[in-house]
Image 1 (spheres, helix red, strand yellow):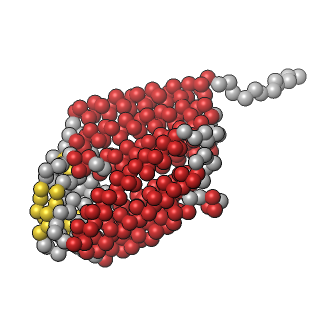
Image 2: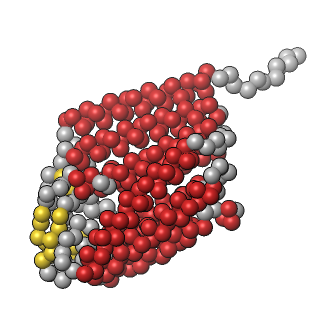
Length: 315
C-alpha cells in the first residue's frame, strides 16, 4: 500500500523519526540549556511534529486526485525544505546556539538565518498551493473531503501564525547567554508579555508567565491530523455519511475557533492555563456553539428509525 504514498514525505517521516531518537538521547545525556530549556528540546519537538505532518501528507497524496504531478512537486519542495530547516535547528542545538531570532555575528548563525528567511516563505506558499489544489478535489466521501479541506486549511493557518512570532515582538532586543555562557543577541521572540525562557509547561516548555505563540502554531499545524482521524474513525464506526460530514464540519469550525481563541489569548499575554475573564467567556461560547453543532449533526441520526423487526407470532 505504501507504494502509492508520496515517497519524499514518507522518507522525511523516517528521517524525522530517527532525529527524534537522536534528540531524545541528547535530552538524556546532554545537560546544556538555552533559556532554561535543554538544548535538544527544540529539535525533539520539531522532529516529532514534522514526522506526524509528513506521514499524514504522504498518505493524503496517495488518495486519487487530479493534478498529482503538481501536488507531488509541491510536497517534494515542502519535504526538502523541512529537512534542511530542521537539520539546521539540530546543528545549532549541537553547537549550543539559538536557531531562531539569533542575530549574533557568527558565520554559521548568519547562514542559518539567511536560510530561514529564504526557505520558510517558499515552504509556506507551497503548502498554500497544495491546500488550494486539494480543496478542489472530489474525494468521493464527503466527510473525508471536508476533513482534507478543513485540515489543510488549519495547517496553513498554523504555519501563518508562526509569522506572529516575528511581528508581535518586533523591536524586542535581548542579550542572553548561549549554552557555553557567551552572550548572544536575540531579536524578537515567541512569548508575549514576558521574556522567552523561564517557567514553562512540562515537555512543551510553553510559557506559564506570559502568552506563548507557539501554542496556536502547534494546534493549527496539527489540526490536519485531528480532523482526518475523526473522519476515518467515524467511517470505521459505521456512522451514516451525512452525519459524518456534519460532524466533521462542526469539528473543523470548532477547531478553527479554538485556534483563533488560543492566538488571541497568546497575543493578550495570558498563559495557557491562566486565561483572563474575556478568554474564558469566549471559550464558554465556543464550547456551547460546538455542542449545539454536534446536536444538529446528530439530529437526523437520532430521528432515524431503527431496524424493522419481524412480527412476533403468538400462539
